[in-house]
Amino acid sequence: MKGTIYTETTVFAPPEQFAADAPYQLVIVALEDGKRLTARVLGDRVAIGDGVELAETRNHIAFFSKT
Amino acid sequence: MYDLVLVGGVEKMTSQTTPKVTEILAGAGDMMGEGRAGATFPALFAMIARRHMYQYGTTREQLAAVAVKNHANGAKNPQAHMRKVITMEQALNGKPIADPLTVYDCSLVSDGAAAVLICPLERASEFTSKPVVVKGIAQTSDHVALDEKDDITTFRAVKEAAQKAYKMAGVTAADIQFAELHDCFTIAEIVATEDLGFVEKGAGGPYVLEGKTCLRGERPINTSGGLKSKGHPVGATGVAQICDVALQIRGDAGERQVVHNKLGLAQNLGGSGATAVVTILGAA
Image (cartoon, rainbow over all chains, first blue to last red; front, side, top):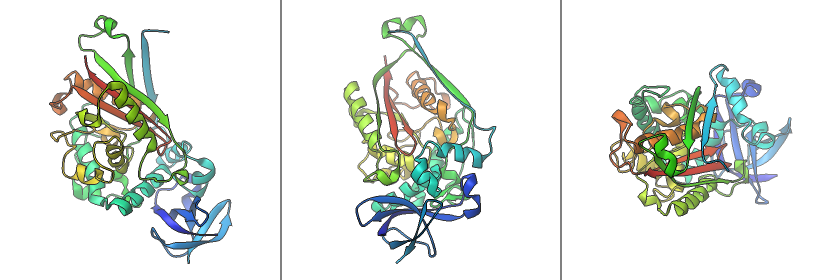
């Protein structure tokens, strides 16, 4: 699954259940099929417009990496 | 039908820790998608801010200007939660919450309550010598999740509620002299000024930075201090906004009284734009 970054943020103040993950980058990916998906990032930080692809899915969370 | 209605709003939030409050509030978002991925409300509005900056060149200074202005107003409001003036430098260097938003871009975790009494105008003199008239009101809704919206830099629900309320009141955006807007985050006030039609799309940042919306500006916004300084007891906020607009129309706002106070607007937002209420109030 491939797409581009539509928007992003880095979360420093997480909800309790994600405390161990912070800070983490949260993104909305514009997928090739026209849909959008809220996801996380694995590896390097991404910016709006960057190309990304699905790296893995953990606990129903999609992790994308820069292509 | 009843012709005498008391509307109340109340919230108690300070008995919980901030992480717990953050988690509870996240429940008003899309839990299956955004929430599961780790979104918080600050994170959702941070993503709106990031996209707004990308599309329109909105800056960190423009976001911070909302906080500086609203704290300056709140410092003059005896009923505000945080009556503290902040500087641009402080606002720009706050603790990061969700990049690009710092703690100074976020509204407060507050306790509060508000109430209004509604009756037919002909009965108003039984209760007050200074009635305030509901000229127009509308509520609308939109998708809950940001990733289902075509353009996250605009709140479609606010736009539609505003158009309906303006039509009902027989006025246009240009006629609105002052407003209480839902500044749950600084970017939300900027987006609201655009969606209400006070400025062109994308021009909300310069509008606040140039001082047009400060207490002595051309259209004062959030003279109460807004959610940022007056506070954001979620269940009370909408009613409290109405109370603050009414206070201005009655000329009872004291040190923060605006000069042109005949027609005011209150805009409330649910979630990250899933619902909106716009109310236009005027002098009798």
